Image 1 (cartoon, rainbow, N blue to C red):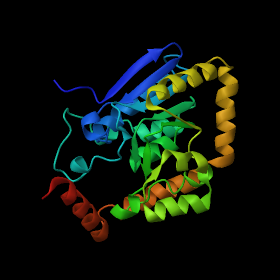
Image 2: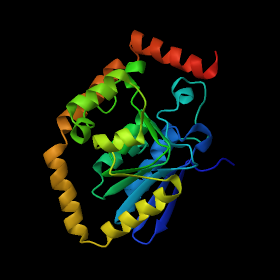
Image 3: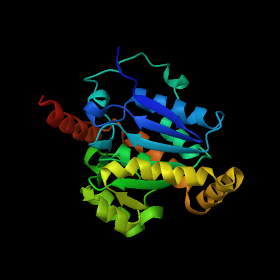
Image 4: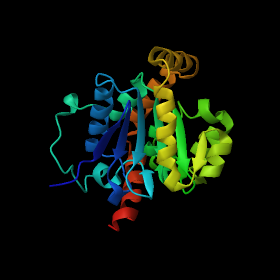
Length: 251
């Protein structure tokens, strides 16, 4: 029997959600995205006040989309509901009224970086590295959401070059709130979550809602999704993705 791709642990008013595919650097699959959505969807009705998201192991938060699944080389370990019945984890994350803290304990690339950007607060270990390689694969990643955190110029540099950068640069640029030694990261995230959970639930949620109204462009997010729908499957995107997959598989 395969391990669950998402682990959840309740600590008082805080729900810890762990992306649990350490053998693949917690890369995002359809199964993981669905179960992440279920965890976030069930948190509010269950009385959770704050969510902390982290990655299993000591190497990765989330290395982005699982290229072997996307290329069809591998299929989900367990059957999934029909597409229309699946829960979109990234969509649920962006929509939840609960405050969400990302505790990034290693690689944070592509869709993993986008996942972290959609959280409210981002903390990282000192070994964490970041990369937004969407343009290498013919896709748009975080163009709608990253600029509000680090400014347009830095966001364009990171997205256009797709270069890797370290936690200290992410901290200096405003992507992160703090950096910790790896052993201290999750305890620090839980301490922060407990502090937030001790405040007025209504005031915290409304503060989040108003700040998001002031800084999040739903039109830009919708445009990014629409553009990616057009780009996926184009000759250039298909060839770029095939080339990248060949590097991973050696085929």
